[in-house]
Length: 204
Image (cartoon, rainbow, N blue to C red; front, side, top):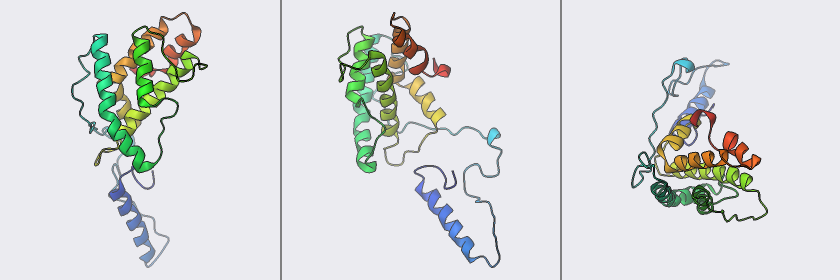
């Protein structure tokens, strides 16, 4: 990333300012390293992973929620607590990666399926397997956009966010339940979704 990490305006401003200063050099061409960028001069393979903490603190942790009803309640609380931050981010940027399923419809779909109910799909012509896959993508996008919308929040890399989502949220646990239910279905498309398209292989 030639201009630094996304949304790090202070670092990006220093990089651009440093680049403009090169125009005043008495001789050229000039090629220098920018000393202020994170990780400069360090072998990327030897760098320690950055520590990231979710800026949104949920009312209760999902870590010990194992009973399905408690898990569903924790999941619903998470979605409700993240929604205001998601809305702020959307208003600020004017765009979102959430497409087919808004947070409410995605959470309702997963809760109904986890409870063994017949989900009420917004598009009744859409196969359930496709709906689960799209809703999972939209739910993860919702969580990501919500947690980076809080003022001062840093943007986690994909591995850091993935670990947080799958290990520290009720949403990750609900999707793991959905995956297991899909694998037990007789419908081939649902089994395929459960095998490949809901939970990353390294998190299942």
